[in-house]
Length: 387
Image (cartoon, rainbow, N blue to C red):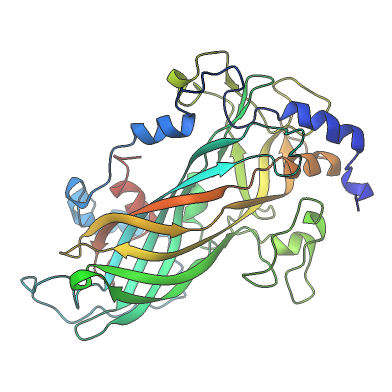
């Protein structure tokens, strides 16, 4: 089943197991009682809360002109009409949920080498995936219990992956400019008012795919051997199933590999000597500095459940629902700027962990009314303090 052109060679496979044997946590000699990097990161983040942040983007001191200059919602979609004015003295949030919201979702995840469980290529780990969303809620006006929400992803931050065998840290970063591209998808879902005094809205589960398309939302996630041949309906296959949503001329969305700066959660790494490294692309090389620095990839997860609006409709924090986060790498670029060989791309793809969701938390902040000039930049600004 190994594809000749993609270079899945047995000897490379064995060497890879040694290379990635510490890709997620600081290694076997770390004190087991010591907090993981993910735990330390969580402890460093200030708790969210509507009372700690502006409840409207106007409080950020941004002018309508400055907001419009970075407006990043597609212009082809008409903006829903706001509800008629409702008295703010009305008890609860019922009938006043229509509006534009920023959402910060923190998903606790675990990962391990599921491809090579008997000789894992990287340490099992636990951390956090942080996602920012922009949500436009229409309907849910006075007398309405149902409506529609349009969600747009505004940021995704992945946890660091440790390679204990060589003291390396793989940190994948999605460039901020990605979220400003008009090609980035939106997701529409049915929404219902719920909770005591309608203090939250519930969203039907949706499948969010970035940089990849499959034949259906529930299609099996492809394995690394399947990547170059994945199909997405309509006779399309391969690179056609990795749409260039970030408009950089490459398939999928680009993930940059951080190479500089201090290691994350350095206080929790007693052994020392850690540094950022490219994504390994040759299983026979067990040293830092060789590999891929840009990945052209696709991601998939599921979103849904309850989004707390708070008793005053200005937002709140509560438990959330989110699925696993799966990654697939179609191609990559090496440290020297050259294109990855098919074998190198296969190795990089094989080394991508699949993040298993263990629970999530949503913090919702109302940014303004429907029709206001609000976008992802406003969501990032309102949550900047806590991130």
